[in-house]
Length: 124
Image 1 (cartoon, rainbow, N blue to C red):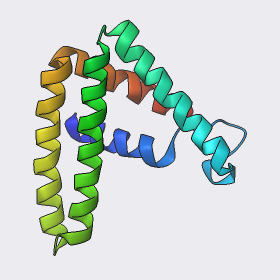
Image 2: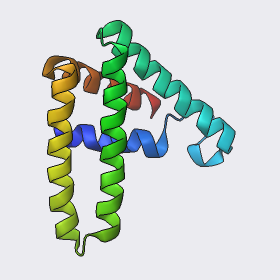
Image 3: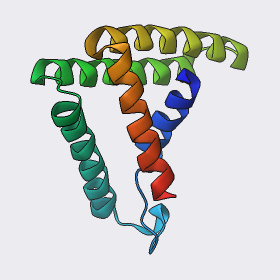
C-alpha cells in the first residue's frame, strides 16, 4: 500500500489532474499551474475539514513532502547504480511514512491515501 501511495503521489505531482477534453501535454503552463493549485487546495480542504488536521499539521506534512522529493532528486542524481537508487529510495520512503503517521495518525493517513487514489482514478 505504501508503494502504491508513492506511485500515486509522484504521479500526482508529475502529471496532475487531467480532464477528459484535453491532455496534460496540451495545456499551457498557466492551465497546468491552475489545475495543480486546485488539486492541492482540494487536498488541503480534505485534510483540514474531513480529517480535522490543524494548520501546523498541514504545514508539517508539506515540509515532509518537500524534503522527501528533494531527497529523491538527490538520490536520482548522485546514487551510482539503479540498485543503490532503489535501496535509498525505499529507505527514504519508509522514513517519510513514519513521519506522516506521526503527524496525522495511521488511520487518517490511510483515509487520505484512499481519497487521493480515488481522485486520480476518477481523473483518468
